[in-house]
Image 1: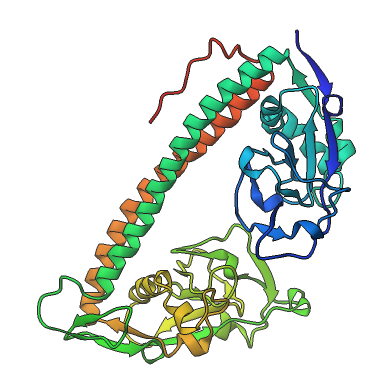
Image 2 (image 1 turned 120 degrees about the vertical axis):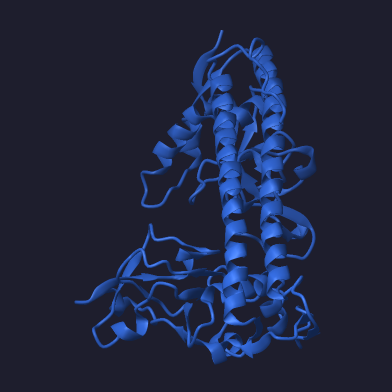
Length: 420
């Protein structure tokens, strides 16, 4: 017989370290919210500390079977069970749940179920920013069947979620291969691979030879390159508020306009900062310097901020050709190497304007770009299908967990998901 009871009746709930200790290059891993992803522990942004610097009396090292629950931020309530691999790690800022009268595998799945997540979302949303404390988590109601049923449900979910995770991983690899094929295709195109006739050295170590008839020229010789308007608090108010693009809006080959912000652009500034259809936008800073997309003109009047380069042709050369050149250069880490850094934080005007790239005659640019765009459109169609499959698989995984840990079906009679 099963019943709903609060989590605090079957588990101990404590806080982690809170503020991190002095960090070290090696030592004890410190597991934080960035290491927790829907039931799994990852090495994403993993920090470490020496064991002697840890307050072990207040926050003992984690043991296999304990569960970490994210207590604040965008992923509040996400959780993961500590496996043997991560036993002996230190709990970071988040909440640690130590099962006492419940199967730890079952509890880990129960905390991921929609019914529990809904309760956590309600409790944590009472503050301005999502935040969950130990008392609130302890009041979360769980469906707790017999220990035998808990073990059976956990075993069933381990098998079925592993099947789904394997399919999700395969779809992810297919998407990665599509992206790699796109870059490889663009690389062959921008070096004129397959063009008949003689070849010459481009003078660019990352490119090699190009057709004899092609120019190798600085970006600024063929295009205007300008930065947008500096943002400050005074400029978010005024009589001439207009939407503008920032780095977050510029993704690879796509400009997202769902979350546009506004800034004051007086009439004397509008000609300088107003975008035209066909302008190439390149991220100067932000999370991905060098990322680029062409503005399609879907909003009649729009501007851009200083963290973006706006590139416009001086003559007939195509911004679309330049886009593919920049795509290849960024993926081959050309700008990072030139900046003598493993992580480039800015692609400045001083770097971009003199950047030398290959340019065939304009008719050839049109022909090659058309071929690349047609192939890219086919890739986009397939990519959307793969992403939709991933979305549906994730939904099925979530529904399966929720149904199993709330007694909506008997796992002994459930139809297994086919492998694919």
